[in-house]
Length: 333
Image (tube, rainbow, N blue to C red; front, side, top):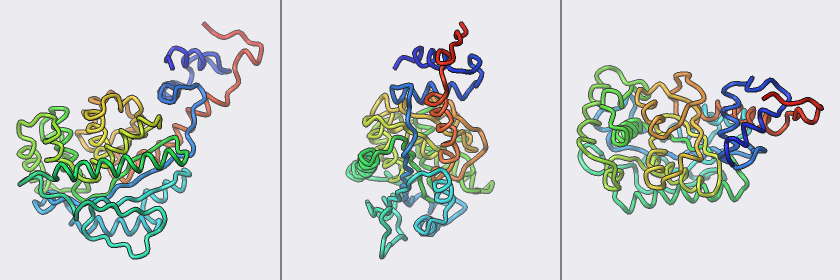
C-alpha cells in the first residue's frame, strides 16, 4: 500500500492532523508492511533460539557457557524475563534449542523443540564457527518456525535468543556488514569488565580481518541461534508477517536475512536501540529507526516485547478512531 494513502487515512481521522507524532509514523510503517489501513497485531509469537559458542573459551564473556543451559531451564519453567514480559503482553512463546551443549530436557513442554545441530559452534577465533551443512540446517530450523507461527495465525513475529557469548559473533557480523571498527562493534554484552572487553575486541578484529560479506564469512562468524533467527526473519517476511526486531544479536541476524534475501528488512520494525555501541550502525544499515532507546541489553526478545504495546497503539489508531467524515466535519488540508 502506498504510504500517501496511509497518511491520507490518518489525516482524515477525528484528531488534529499529525498530532500523534511518532505514533503516526509507526502506524504508517505497520500499515505499509501489512498492506492495509486496518493492520492486526494479534496473535503474536516470540520464538527463542538457544545455542552455545565455542569462542567463549577465549575469555570473551563474563559468564561460562553452562549459563545458557541454566537459562533455558528458567525459560522452560516460565520464570525468565522474556517469559514474564510475553505473558504480560499476551504473546505466545516457543523455545528452540539449536545447539546448547548442557541442555537435556527429559519431559519437554509443548512449546519446546529440540533441534540441536551440535553442542555449540566451533571457536570462531581459530576455525569457522560452522560448516555449510550446519548453516543450512540452522536456517531451515528458523524458516520452519516461521512457517508454523504464520500457519497458526500469528501476524507479528519476534525472534529472541539465548546464548552466552553471542554478542561476540553479533559484533563480528555487524563489523562485517557495516564496516565499523571493532572498538565500536564490540560492547560489554552481559557485563564484561575492561580486561574481557579488550580480549573480545581483539578476537573480533582478528576474526573479521579484511573479510567481506559472503556465505563463507557468515559460516565462519555466526552462531546457530543467529542463523536460525535469520531464517525465521526471511521466511516470515515472505509469508507476509510483521517482524518486530529485538536488540544487537537479533539485528545481526536481520543483517544476514537481508543479505541473503534482499527486501526482508521492508517487513521489519526495530523495537529498540540497545546499549551495545554497534547496534546503531546495524540498524542504520537496515534502514530501521528504533522505537525505543532505553539502554536495554538483555536479549531474549525482551526489548521487542516491551515495544509491543506501541504496535497495539498504532493499530488501534488506524482501526478504531472515527473519521472526520463520520462526524460531518471537513478534514484539514
